[in-house]
Amino acid sequence: MSQILLQEIKNLVQQERRITRSILEKINEVDHRRLYATWGYPNLYEWLVKDLGYSHSAAYRRMQAARLLKSVPVVSEKMQSGGVNLSTLAKVQTAIRLEERRRGGKISSETKQELVQKIENKSAQETDFLLAEIFPEQKPRQEHMRALPDQEVRLSITLNSEQLGKLQKVRELSSHTHLNTTWSELIEMLSDQFLNKKDPVRMNQREQNKARSSSNPIKIQAFQHLVQKNQDPQKPSDHQISQGSQSLPGSQKSQYPRKNQIDQTAQDSESSSNVPARSPSQPLNASLTQRLSDADRKRVRPASFKTSFKTKPRPEPKAIPSALRRKIWLRDDGACTYTYPQTGQRCGSRILVEIDHLEPKAFGGRHTADNLRCLCRTHNHLAAEQKLGRNLMDFYRRSFSFKEVQPS
Image 1: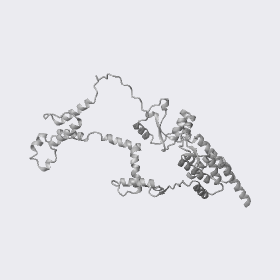
Image 2: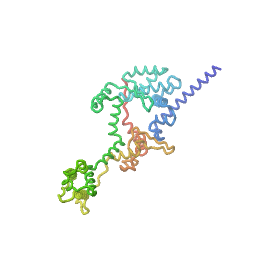
Image 3: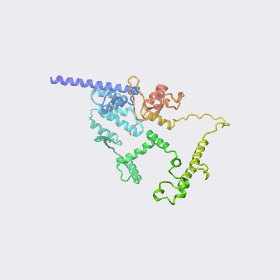
Image 4: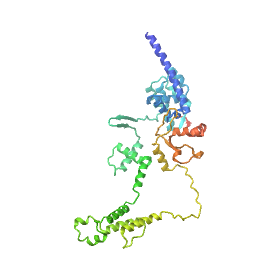
């Protein structure tokens, strides 16, 4: 009975390997055709996690192994024989990707095949040691995030000497306003400075606050105070204040502003509005009201005014105006608005979000709110494929791909 059970398990393992290989081939097809974008996901990894239900680590291993299988077909046979598994294949593909990024070029298929042969029948730990010998310049990324109570997290990162020196320099230069700051406070300060410059929500709030405080508070306060004083019969006139200020008790002097203080406030408002001063016989509040209305009339062009030349309409700028970009960003909440019509799956990604034209500029699209939307880069490229064609977009992607290089 034990031998029968053992044979059944081995048969299931062989079947599992065949199924795993088939799954990796289907994943490559989805990646090549970019079907995850059509289905409403920003990348292949999100589709594997959210739609197929893989864990984050399982999705990552299958995605990396599928990409290595695509460039090295011999991996299929070695998976069927059990010489390699998802963990070792994912480690090799990750090391290759980091090396290509470090060198700025692609590693040849022959070199990748040699790496696969070297890791055959090796454990995950042995594969790590082997890759460390082949790529000694690579340093493992040691970044971990751990959840803590009270909605806090512990972030562990590794910095080189140059990165640490930059943070220490910022800490020194900000010591006048932020003395003895912790690293978390320093990161928060730098994040606030970046968000104040780049976050459309904060920029919009700052413009609203600026618009509310754009009027002259001194002019408004002086005008309202003078009108209220003349409408109040219990308050003495300017002449009474100047003549009777010597006889008023100290407690009553502070109730009314002196005439020279009112005149000084009015003169400040006069100088800010660039209008003539009032005559001595003219009431102060009437003079200020007249000057404000005169200033408003000067801003209005007379109806009889006609230009002696014809003005050409201003051409539409090539770039989307910043104010309009912020408006679209706030409207769409800074997230991708693509939705797969058959399932209603909305992308909602906030990574690499771009402003896209529903009707492309090449076809006469305008910079208007109803013609603009937020899309992530994946769905922006998908919309371009649907409008301009897949061949043109593939040529665009190949133009920015890495050149093939050999590791030294």
